[in-house]
Image (cartoon, rainbow, N blue to C red):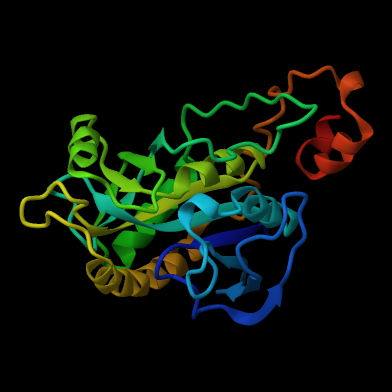
Length: 283
């Protein structure tokens, strides 16, 4: 059965339910991942967990080693990747402690690395639907089983950070019709698609950004209060999701099949070695 990956966002730095756990350090062509991976089992299924910001929350959103993280999941054999992330709400009906399973992303970051293929090889992968529908269904059902209020669908606006939004920015994002705002998940989604891993986000609302007249400033104290409560819900959702993730290969297991434009004869030996795990089967 394919391995399942879980990314823990702000507040979710470990998975209590993991049994037979062991820590694994993974080397990648893009440096060290955020932390050691913790591999174990939940309900008999093999699961690999990573704290996105490192245990103790040591890495800022802008400095996250996205490529190393996703490549390492691939190297460990993960085919399904469920990502938990703290977000701000841009809509009145999405209150703190609500969960959202977005189906779209909008990029407001500033030049973060978002592809593995930055030398010798040009790859244009389809990304109109950035979230795996199958995994999104599983996540939604898990939220309902765990008793967490959830919205399926919507747009996650990915901003740079680490500062929270200005009021003008917050109102602009609302005028665009975005649902939630965060600082991390778009790069993960893009790289997971390039790694042919099914990916979905569970966005956990901690605040109303700063647009709400009754919540006109986001403070760390406020966020931490809801992070703690969301983390407990996230543990329950993850356990339910793992039980129901298909034991079949990822629906995106051949995402790169028709995406490589570069003449194979022009790809250097060093690039073939660097990218072997990702596109070796197509070369």
